[in-house]
Length: 423
Image 1: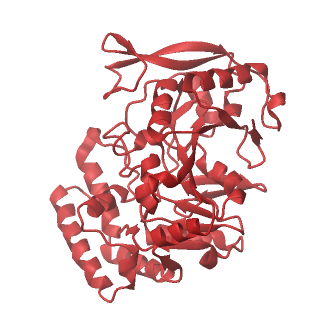
Image 2: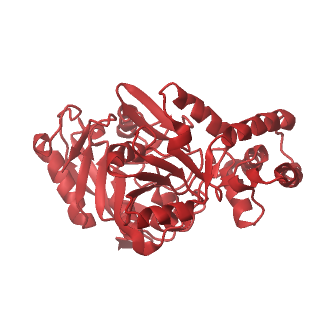
Image 3: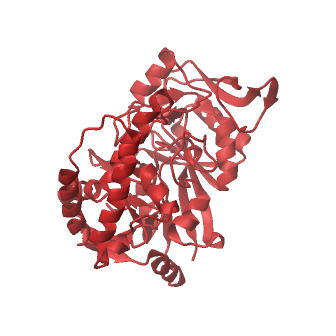
């Protein structure tokens, strides 16, 4: 049996959670392969909005097993609150959610380190969500990290103390004004660890490969977006893990030749949260309208998202790096009402016109080259078939397909799982 991947192709917030929720009924297992609790997935159905931080988006479907893979970093405190939020929906989390022993733990001092590091950078800060994710991945690659499996060890608290004391010295080194009560944070942490112990820990790579041998279907779910990948994103304004297709292999222990379909999710326009270059960003009323209509605020952080026209140069790059086989376009409904739409098809880069994403896309190096497309007035939110969509939107879709050489199979016309058109 093979594995299908679902990935974001922009700077995150593309609507992956909704699509995983829509697709879940087709899969036996939903597995999250990277990222931490800064990456919230928003799902909306039956008139209720759900925000997930660490739990895979298949948790609301009774027939699917949900796995938090080894590539994920987990904050027990955030995770406990997430579980409490699911309690009112009578979800049997203990049987439907499994956690890899190799997933790393975010300690309270990781969060403090994150804040101290960002504060020390002043105007050069990278826009961290201050969830401790970067420092946790640094400990992982530095071979200092504490993992879920360590919770089962007799010397867990000793391991914790050694790493926390090391962090304390690093926080002191930054010499910034950081107000905190570590004892209080640690009490909260260890209480949450006891809750975590009630769930099932697994050797996830063995579990998933055994599932494949048994013919089970698996959907690997990514967080953030491809342009935030630690290697292929707009470094250093990136996340700390591999958000691209390759990350699913290392984040779950699945061989590359087991991957079949790669579903690439993108918005009909572009957004970005935090710092970093954004060639098609709009600073006018059009950008403000996109943000308002699209409700462009982070599901976990609440931070406002920067908005701009669709960037096909960046999108083509993400399609190539991930080997995308199908495209899903989200938030087409947000563009209703614009008389003219712009699409970036090339960059002017240091006096030369290019069609690929260069090493540096800072504004002093890159100017977007646009083509204009006619907009549409129709309200898409009540439409349920491709035939109903306005002709201008169909032409917009066909133009994108031609440029990217990959078919758009799904068009989302609203936040609810029912507002999804299969092409």
